[in-house]
Image (tube, rainbow, N blue to C red):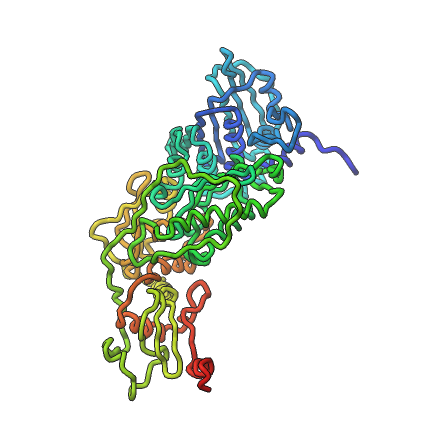
Length: 591
């Protein structure tokens, strides 16, 4: 029988679209605070937000009548002219407060700045009470308890307290980055998770969120074309992370995840870094697009947008990023050791016509290559290798091994080897990466060989990343890592797998953390051993740009011969190609 649904059930259905977890509800409340003109926003959570969270601001506040109306569906002050094209606020649907209140216990206390007293309203499971007078400071405080108590089936879809806390932290980070003039704080059960003071510098706020080393490895970008403005900071191609979590994209002040923008970023960095295996670029980009050229009303969560001319947006991003990278083509990440990557000659493949272009107003930061002594590879050689001098002479009697003898290294990346009836070209990084990976996988299950650091390596991390490492410390110990919390925002690395003793420890630990973030906290590390070993093997391997001796090249070839899977790297690409002598002679017309 056809019937109208009761209002409470309608609100609960709407809550399913808007409120997926505590983080999504907190996002809606913070956006309301930003729209209210607040310059200070404080967030508190308990049990990752599952049992309690609050958002307190010093915005313009609400009167008694506005407070009663705020918990009704589709009640908003953010569409004054009823024009869905001209949307200038973050929250405009009028669904957040009633949706949250329909599945939880909510209390709102608010006081407009021009009044001397405040008002409070309570809503439980969609049933609201009348507003009553209450002591309050200027602004609005929203408290939510027992999220999903009215729809308990949703509770089983929530993750652990730590996972929910990380999700809340990410939401606050993404909103705080775009509004540096607002101070943000986040506490979990009276423990400070973050505190971002207000600042006039966008770059300072970006560095607070991503990490202060980003300042030394980022390039400012600012362009305007046909009414569309692009500003922000892009990381050097040699400064990457294991996941795309540190790519921050904004459209008209709104944090978004848009396929057009992500595709443009991949296109801009194409040819300047590896195909995903070497990580993702780190960046923060802020687009300002005329309201009539972008639709932000695509999804209830408001994380997706649709552009009227996606091609123009993509062209602007690709051209702007590539131009900035090309102008700084000789710069490389300051945290890399020499031999990690050589300088890359960068030439933009696409340049969009620009009506207006001007220099970024941010300071001109200096970048430096680090120059350190190159360590020996210490590759064991299980095959008799002639000296470099004898290798340059024709081999007459000795039968060549399957992968031959190394003759030269070209472009500091490829080993040229002479086999019986062919010439081989070996990608030194891909080959050594495969060997390192196989050794790590073989050692797993037994007590791995470790390297004790005489002086522990202290690494700065975000507080939630320190908590993540601490929660996994016993499992990491099985992999050969002894990592301990060193304060709230640092870890101390005391031991690491012996295979990685020559690697960049800081970079490897950061990528390890990024990899752990992608795993559900209910998954054991041993069940994701291939992913973890692959990431560590990548950083524990000889890099492109590393000069090798003839002995080191031959030792690498001999190890490849003893590994049955050495023909391809851990990412599926070939480690070497073979040019048969017959084919070479045909190309030169000798056959």
